[in-house]
Amino acid sequence: MSPRKLVATQRIVRNTGVARQVKTWHRDQCQVCGTRLVVPGGTYSEAAHIQALGAPHNGADIVGNILCLCPNCHVLFDAGAIYLRDDLVVMAGETEVGPLRLDSRHQIRLECVRSHRARWRR
Image (spheres, rainbow, N blue to C red):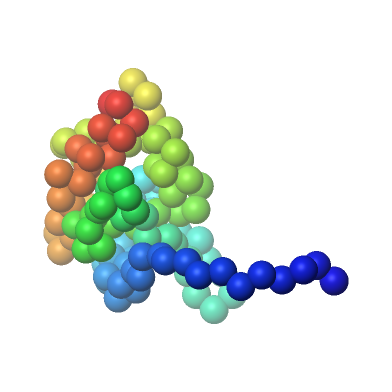
């Protein structure tokens, strides 16, 4: 048996209701590629923070800082492989992917978009 060690840690407690609201507005459809994953028991999507929550980014856990993404687009977004322009067009490097899928109830905060771009120097 592997040895065990008691450790204490701190983590950010996310507001799951905020993420659930964004995912509901978009009906679990990825705002980047349009994929809607159907799994046993329903559909699946991920809530991706535009401006990361942790230090040093310190983004807010609010609907204006969350996107509804499929797992693939979530990884690409978190790694800076795709990003948003101020007009909410999705970019991959210098290539325009297309407009972000929007819902009138979901107001994206441009300061979060700019912070994400600055993180990846875009």
